[in-house]
Length: 443
Image (cartoon, rainbow, N blue to C red):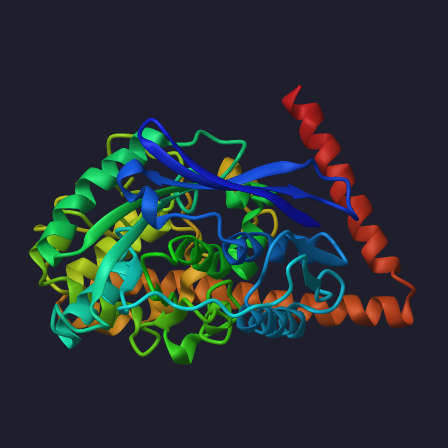
């Protein structure tokens, strides 16, 4: 892979930094990748080779590129960190699609000098994790402290408009910008809207969620290296619940350079503790956006139907704040609403956007089992045994499914070892016969 033709400029209301990505070892189209922002931040945005290297490195590794050649200079600290990050991913996921990529730079490896004075930023999606990072920072640091967050990036092309084949949801993004602008004023931070297409190098959710989204966020911070020196990425999981994930305390610090320090923030807190921390901030109750359903109407922040919306509403209910939260249409949670959640995956592993297209909106409880389990006792304490019992039933269904899958795996290994895969072949033939009968009945 080559990253070349770096450019930056302003056209109309937008400032853009861009580069061309040319694949060398796989049959993928050449593409211009870009990072844009409002023209008033044009002096802060630059075509930083470090930024575009971060945006491209994980797709390059996934698709078997033997190198990434960057036109320009690369920070040696970032190079070393990316080598470490790729080795971590290889350890997690195996060697097949995770052979570390060589990093080359036409102008060598030179450490840039950081701007002065220090300036901290974070990413503000409107979700629980990001709001917790901002809230805890405000509680921990005086507004004039160098570690106090001064800027927040809201990124289009991340969780809104991130899929090339789907609607880009520009109207929904503008709604999020308008909503979070009020919160930004309350928190005394500058909200910086960012538009990017880095995900289009490979917009599969498997790559983005499991391997690369921390690097993509870090790329945004590096593109604004003229403005910020520290960027906080909000944790997804508590430190005791960590699993391989694309933003992780082992990965994110490796995306630092000599001029921008990347920090993974908030892993000390559970999901429920995060909701409790932000629930008393009135501005949050007017702006909270937790939804990950890409099919939600453009004029709402939350669909109130997907798993994440239902879980967040249930968490707010625990703290007695659901009625006050204006971004959700419900004042209460019913057992019937929880029963709409799917306890086990249907038809294979959760790979988006294919999964999104099959299950709009997502109601898959199994993707956040630990979070749901942590809600049972708090719901009982507030007298909502009806909700706790539904969750217990759903978790029991999931545990039975897990036990079945474990037994199935053992049976498959024994079949291949001692029977040459005969049982697996008979099972496939049986499924094919049933599918044929189903199609005939439908016809």
